[in-house]
Length: 328
Image (spheres, one colour):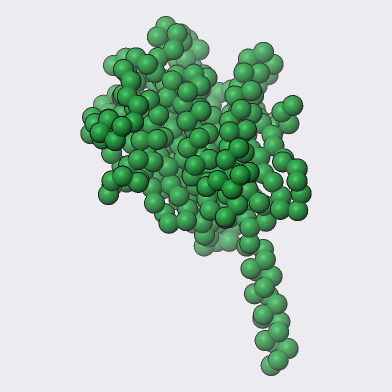
């Protein structure tokens, strides 16, 4: 009996060690998925994307390396990407069928499952900040349309004219835009305290109509975080990500089926989703600091870094197509 007790205790200890946070902190970014093989194969076109992703990593590292919270790192990174016209979020958002800009964003904290999101906003400069404010300054999870814009204004967030989100490319409505030159942005992070957070921001689907809302601001579909499992941000054809509740689905597979995060993510992206219609990808970090970045399109703008507890070195890589590179 004594030997059995010792064996069981040893197994429990081993299980605990396997589930404990293995990395000091980590962060993953996506900048949208789609038909990106042309960008990935052209060094001149790829260079500004690599530089932007590397800059976003540096912003996240500046927060996490100093002991900052995962949620603060996510907001800082996405705020930068919303200001970068290379991506379909904030400045550089894509046009609706009516020729206006409607933006969505969400954030979720894994430590207490608090979440906030905005959908179909037209005048909020940084939708990710509005999502955070909904979470912290209201009793709601999601606000949409004029109500969300009005709430943000009341809370003192920066308000801009709708045309602020335009760039020369979006105003000219050129063929490159019609083919989908950019995408939703997202960030997931694990901080030194073991807390997870996820955020997503998007300028929406090109030529969308009737107040369409995609998966990005829907908690459980495009964005989810739980300290007991993982943090997830999705990008792609939102209707399919909503139907499959992809972000929560991944956390559930990890938590209840005990699937490694990479296995769970691959099962959803490559097997559950229709890879023709359900085109896209996701980024995720589990509670130990392991990451996943699968996509079923030709490419996904993505980047990550992590720091092992046993090493002073920061490991980081960026990618567009299948290959990942280490930025200088």
